[in-house]
Image 1 (cartoon, rainbow, N blue to C red):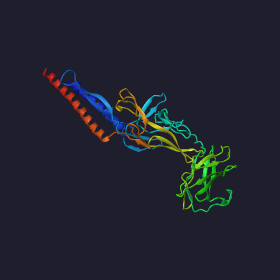
Image 2: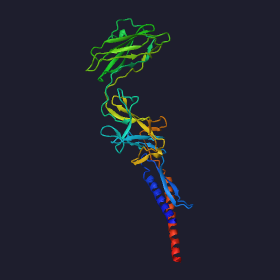
Image 3: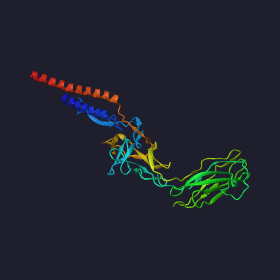
Amino acid sequence: MSFSQGLSGLNAASQALDVVGNNIANSQTVGFKSGSVAFGDVFAGSQIGMGVQVAGVNQSFTDGVLGAGTGSLDMGIQGNGFFRLVNDAGRVFYSRNGQFKTDANGYIVNNQGMSLTGYQATGTPPVIQPGAAVGPIQIPTGQMAARASDSGTLNGNLNSGTKVVTKTPFDPTDSSTYSSVTQADAYDSLGNKHTINIYFAKTADNQWTAYTRDMTSADNGVQQVALQFDTAGQLTTSPAKLPVQGAAYKGGEPLNFSFDLTGMTQQASDTAMNSPTTTGYAPGLMNGYTVGDSGEIIASYSNGQQQLLGQVVLSNFTNAGGLSSEGNNCWTETPASGQPVTGISGTGNLGTLYGNKVEASNVDLSKEMVNMIVYQRNYQSNSQTIKTQSELLQTLVNLG
């Protein structure tokens, strides 16, 4: 019996050393999760055991340390969750390795060519639509389309001590018919830039008239709105909308929007306008993209705009230890793991995703070196029991 006991010990110690060796070999593998051996004793109807067996190899899904990524699409996870990947056949895999890049078609893939999944932003401007399906995320390679200005905002202060303009009618070419002027940029449907002049003329105490004129298009008609302020200098006109209209220019649609002047005040201080803002912009080429800590992929363009491209999702399991290891830092769902719960980083019991980071292996090299020594001693001790049993048998033979 001692032979079988010692042999089982040798086999168990050898498998344990295999696990330690695998851990050490993958100590620099991004997202690797270390394994540990669970032993079980063997009995066969007697009080004396038949030896030992490897009951299983368990993986530790504790977090690895986050380090700096080397690519703009590198990502790291802290807490629960896995990246959800699909291969060309549509089979779903899960991984903690956040080293990603784009393929020839702009899809985000790992080093094995599996596609990272999440929500694709759609629409103009692109947004994540409610109820959007989870699927491969694609980064568009074309230019960002122009957007026509459809609203604007202008805030500032008008000097209450300004003299009343007495010369009428308003003439944008005659500075004596207005009190002050400022400029704003706007864009038509093709991204053509228009310069909009905004004039203010004081007509009486606490009363002003604001005018706009498109200085770019040929037929630049003047639009206006009357503004009334109370004795505290607060604007009482409602709605305080200053129209902008301009003729078609270089094939673009005519401008037609309004500036919101709600934040205007009239105080006994110099007239000063904050920089006017409009919603439009010219077309732009992509300069690059980044991954935010919520998994949002944001592209930057040459026109100074940023645009949402998609959002990465995470998946978690009731029993991550029940996942089936598939190699290449990937696992697949099994009945023991339970079904995945998929969602956005930081929601529910899902962990946090960090952009431009990668999760290092969670292998503790010091612990593995100690385990290697222990299992080596176990192997030697079990071989000694076999040697001792052999010597006992030799003694019995000699007695015969």
